[in-house]
Length: 265
Image (cartoon, rainbow, N blue to C red; front, side, top):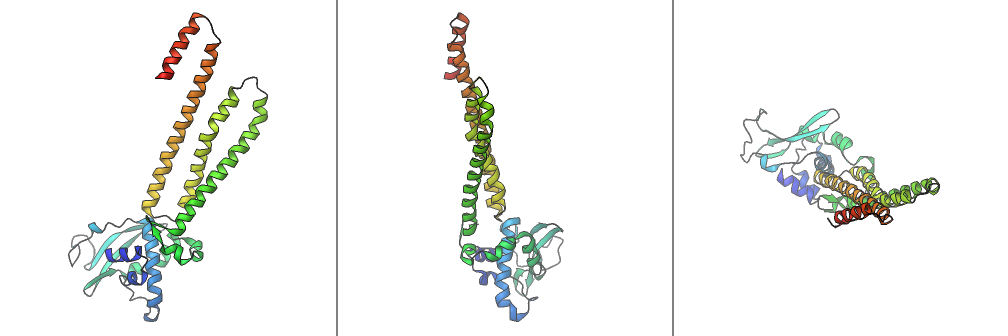
């Protein structure tokens, strides 16, 4: 299993195909069909299953207490719409291979969990070049998704600001204008993150990349909410300070001392 994973991560799918039990594939088609199946399985595993190689047996006969038939080993299960599909190893002669029963299901698994129709149009170099568990086309997709998400969020924010401008102009106070100005940037950033996340998930990322980007987006949302809160607090302090500076009585002096102390804190 480790040999297959290392070969597929190096994009050496001809070598990776040697770890598949291809006996169910006609001999004339194995040379071409094998690497294709090896690559499709790699995509499925990247998206759905973290393979813990250390949990597999080191014994030549495999685990004997796993309730599986002899010469069989379970790597893990892939969740599909029709239920879990086991990824199995099988001992063929003196070597272990990815079981023929699993190999026969690779096309269906890839059709449901792979790149989809877009995978046919991605050039091979963009699929084979990888960095930090991401293929080159996915890096390009993430950059484009980030740019488009920010551009769309900025456009929506500008449109909303223009729509509210006539209403704000009718009021006698400037507080609402200041409130809109203070909230625009944090809310734009939050909207951009909300647009970027589903776009990133659509790029068929590997499980580690999905978890990292998901955690990063959640953390950034928390930061933008804190940013908005700080801006609103600053605005409220400025408004209150403006009110106090117009008050010359002793109560105003006491309140100014309290606000000053609060700002320093």
